[in-house]
Image (cartoon, rainbow, N blue to C red; front, side):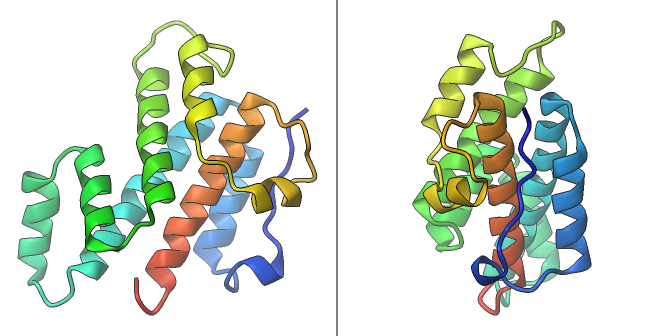
Length: 167
């Protein structure tokens, strides 16, 4: 059974149209591989925006050069964002795990899902958000639903960091 994950009003900033669309899109997609790819697309986009915001007064052309030519790999961008103070260690850790899961889903011709031993191992390495699991009203959450939840939580966390006055 797939859970529909929602965030409580007291837990998050007021919804924006983009935020609501992301929640709906990630909740409605049944295929975990596609959910991961879509979620990861948002993660990449938001991570780039977060880094640009934290670079402050540097000219836009220098920011673009840094992100497009100097820091090409996502793992390097995640580490850079963490070193800038834009990402907490736990969030950065989860983003690295998501990149590994996305890579496995994207580069296997045969159908790979959350029962794949490598995917299951990676999901177990995710730093779970206990509050988010309580919000999901699920004590025994399957690997697939745990992955869905953590993708949603991570995408929304990045979105909120961008929207915050310090983002």
